[in-house]
Amino acid sequence: MLSEQVIIQKIIKSDLFHRFCEAYGELTNLPLALRSPDYWYPPLYSVKRENPLCSAVCKSKIACSSCLKTQLALTKASRDQGKAMQCDLGLVDIAVPVKACGKCIGYLYTGQFLSQKQTKTELKKTLSDIRNWQLNYSPSMIENSFLAAEVYEPSKQQAIIELLTQFAERVSEQVDSMVIKDQMSEPIMISRAKSYMKDNYAITIKLSKISDHLKISQYHFCRQFKKYTGLSFTDYLNRLRIEEAKLILIAPNCRVGEVAYEVGFQSVPHFSRSFKRIAGMSPKKWRERKSEIR
Image (cartoon, rainbow, N blue to C red; front, side):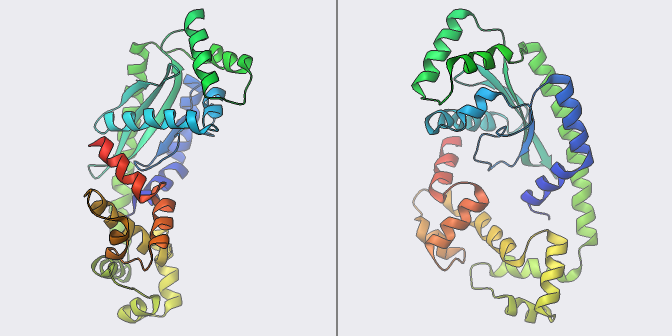
C-alpha cells in the first residue's frame, strides 16, 4: 500500500483538494490544511488566511508549546470524528479525521476563530497572558488580530465540522480508489522488492543485494521503484524501519539505542536523525507524546 506520507501529498496536490480549499476559504475566511497524524508543528502555520497572532505565536518557543499542547489534545479527541477545541488564547481550532481503508491517515485542520467577541475585560486578560510569552509584536497588532478574527458560535462550528466531515469522506473515497489502482498497476518487481524489505529490514540491505535478488540492474530498479512508490529505495527502507521502531518504542522500557539496532540502523545518531526527519520529532519525544495520548 502507498505510504501515508505519499497519500497525503497526493491529496494535497489534487485538483479536488485545491478547489475545495479555495471555496472553503472564500466561504468562511478561515485557513485549511491537511496534515498526517505524526505532524509535530502548529498545523495551520504559513497557511493562507492564517491569523497573524497565531503566526506570531509559532515564532516563540514558550507560546508554541502551548499551541502544540492544544493540538495534541485536539488530535486525541478527533480520532473518530471531528471536534472543536479552544486554545489558551480563546481561539477555537477544529480537526476532522481523514481515513483510508478504514485507517486514519491524517486530519483536516481549520480554526483560529472566536466563539464570541471578547469583552474588554477578556481582551485585557488575553493581552496580559501574551505579554508573558514575550512575543516580539506590538499590543496594537495583537489586539487588531483579535478584533479581526472571525466569530463562529457553537452551532456554526458544528456546521463547519459537518462540512469538513463530508469532504473528508469524499477524500477517503478518492484515496481508496487510488490505493486499489496502485495495487493493480504496481509491477510484480516492486511488490517483490517491498516484500523483501519488509522481511529483512532488520539487517543490512544493500542496493546491490536487492537488485541481485530481483535479477535486474541497480539503475533500472531505482528508476522503477521511485516511479511507483514516489520514494527512493533508501528513503522507503528508512520509513519502513521507522514505522517498525514506533511499534517498539511504545514499550516504555526499551532504550532508544536498542530500538535503533533492532530495526536495522547501524548507528543511533543516524536513527535519531532519520526518525526526526520522518516523524517530525525525536524518538524520545514521540514516545512521550504517545504516552500522553494513552
